[in-house]
Amino acid sequence: MNKLHACGPVRQSVAAVGFATLLLCVAGSQALTQDIMKVSPETHTVLLENARVRVLSVVIKPGEEIGMHSHPPNVAYYMSDATLRITGADGKVENRSAKAGMAAWSDGAVHTVKNVGTSELREVQIELKAPLTKSAQ
Image 1 (tube, rainbow, N blue to C red):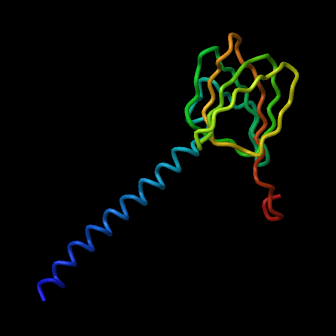
Image 2 (cartoon, rainbow, N blue to C red; image 1 turned 180 degrees about the vertical axis):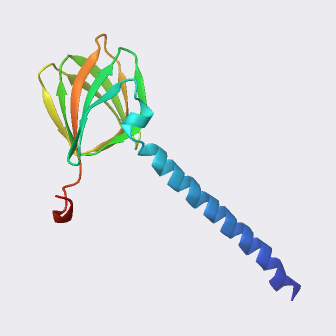
């Protein structure tokens, strides 16, 4: 009978560890999906925001790095040439060259960005929001 009672504390410990792991996973996923305005308000400025879009002005100096953040589907319009190193949440690294006058579509992303070039990145980013429902229109 003592053996049955000994299992109680073990089960409680396993349950506590499982619960703590779940909390860490949720907290970690929230950290990975931080809004850019919370992560880097010094490089991003909201120009317009409504129920359908958020338009951001982005200025990233050479050598400047922005921590892990997320974007919904968006269009980026580059106003300067720049070289960026983008690291996804999965650790995949991509170097990207932005050219002034170029527009690019993204389905959304979770990543870090570093300006690895010698010129300042200037960009307008238009983030799309979920379509309005009939009741919200």
